Image 1 (spheres, rainbow, N blue to C red):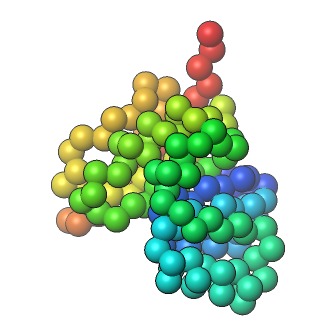
Image 2: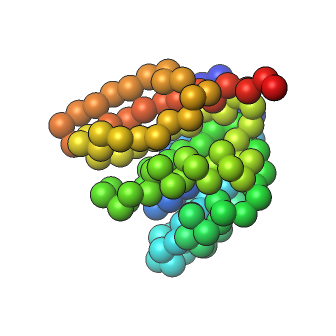
Length: 148
């Protein structure tokens, strides 16, 4: 099991099929909240939740940016894998920071199109790992507590 996921609280923004969140649950995450705007995908998430008996999963059928615009609950691990070429990553990062969705030392996984050259990463996020292929960029960041 991955120590990052063990007993963590996870948020799967733009959940789609829920692969990232369900995998986190299978690796001992304490709970996962899925946010998915597409009704068909949300129905599939509910079916998979029942099929997998994933009692620690909660599903929100809403636009991620609308949901993240609310004051949040702190999560230890956040997955950001939005539809490509829609300009959603920077908006998502801003809302996560602004509305208290991140714990003091969150891990944030971002998957994007490889050609995306500008991601506005907050100064207290440090790149832990990166893998870029011809089409996809995967980056894992650690958010550190800001001492005032």
